Image 1 (cartoon, rainbow, N blue to C red):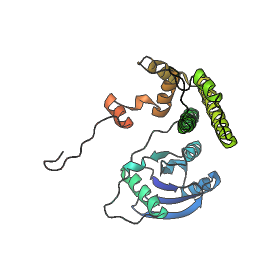
Image 2: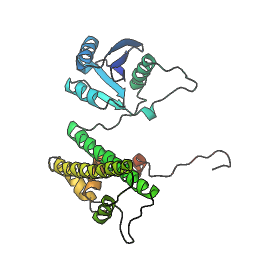
Image 3: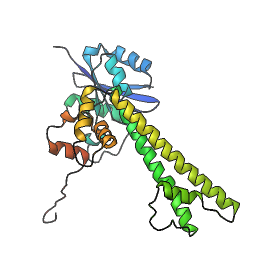
Image 4: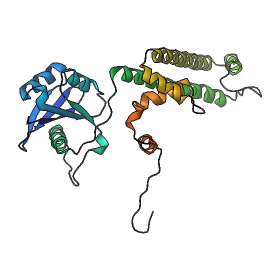
Length: 272
């Protein structure tokens, strides 16, 4: 039977701390390498063939690039959920070396929980959806700046005018002030509101085009989600992109648990 070596990687933007858990029980620190595919390839080549290795690292800001690189090299890899990492009570020392060793040891023991990893196409769609979400937040901030400025100056839209409609924006553009500084302020706020509107529209159009190039399975999920009341195309794409492979959830309870939309309990003695 082939003996497998379990490799734990503590990944950062520029460096990777590595450790290996040997089949005989020994856990060794392998040092720190540059976070470059050439360095990773060289390290793994020293440890053995792809069939002799299993690699893991924690999910984090570096994303899934390392996972895709290792998979392309034929090395089995899993991305671990950081919040489900087992930790000893009272362990107050945290270093890159200890993190890598703990990963390797726990991986060999089977104590780690892996997350679902999207392919590059799905992650690209997720990035686009999140860019649109960021743009919507920026749009809200731009609108708040303009509305609060007008409120401070005692300017109120005519009765019956709905905020942020064409009529409202036309009224805001017609406002004139005594001081040049105020004129410059409102012009900048109006420009930013229009810029944010165009940005959101541009990203939503990009999402529509990206869905046309998505896999038939993902397109079907997006289509089916729109059968739910209140879910339109952009909302459906957002849900599908963030959830990923919906079939990985065995039940509705698991799906709701993943989303955090379930109650939790904290009981001790007679207190609940």
